[in-house]
Length: 215
Ligand SMILES: [Zn+2]
Image (cartoon, rainbow, N blue to C red):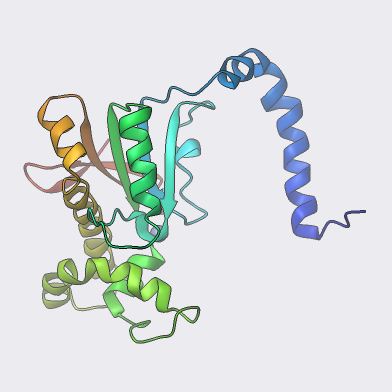
């Protein structure tokens, strides 16, 4: 017999609400989705519990294909051995689902970006912070000018790092030949976004000016 922890019990309560008010009224939709999914947008977001894309964009099941990880990062196109989770999801979204848009959404108060800025986990062992340190080392280059201009602490520095991370992910997306081709052919749009947790305002990146403007 399963003896739920208080954490699981809370999840199960939510699940029952979902069965009541979320699943039943959409039964028809779920029946269609059983045949397959056809999302038009892929969203890359942070694992942070405060920035759930489905909630922020108020979408129904089947509408967005989502990857979430520490700091909403896309690694560059790499073919070295290893397990490339983001690349696999990206490949599936672009080549199989043929999404029309990939949206990278950074956010305010991002712990991953903060750690990239302070480098506090630098040199730690895998399992002790080393995996995070290695992952966010992707931001090292972008960090330099920010640390120079704003230092490595305080919201102006952190916000600059959070927004720079979105640009790093967009640049890395464009290091994938299939992404480049589809963008060139007008079959795919790449978009940068930033969700400010404090006021709940979504900002969109204007790639020409480099500024994030409220949506
Ligand atoms: Zn985050």
